[in-house]
Length: 126
Image (cartoon, rainbow, N blue to C red; front, top):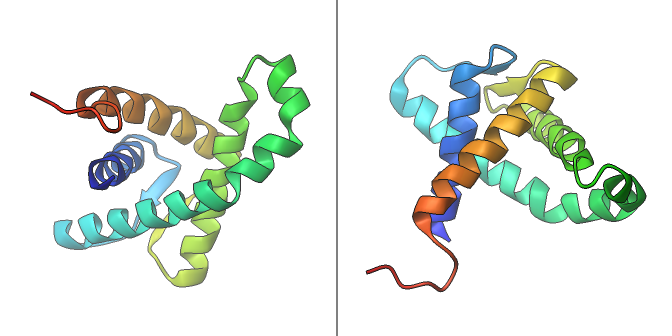
């Protein structure tokens, strides 16, 4: 569970570092790491609480688009995370929908790749 949280924080960090529309406003590396851990916690809560409702409400669109609408849902969740961060005073944000869309795509790909190294839940690594 902790490894998956760190993977989420790292994938959000990669998206923040590579995409110009996703920003982090800190001066030191230590503050950046702490901020990304806080953002990952907020993103995890948003995903756990809001994503099931979004998926349920948009299930016809998900079926019609063969699941590609999940990118739009993930972009909306990234924007919601940015809004919550702004309300809490966390210096991280997303500038607009397209930044959130590309960020959601990047977070998904990086998380997929990193989680493939972590392994499945309950699997013992040798």
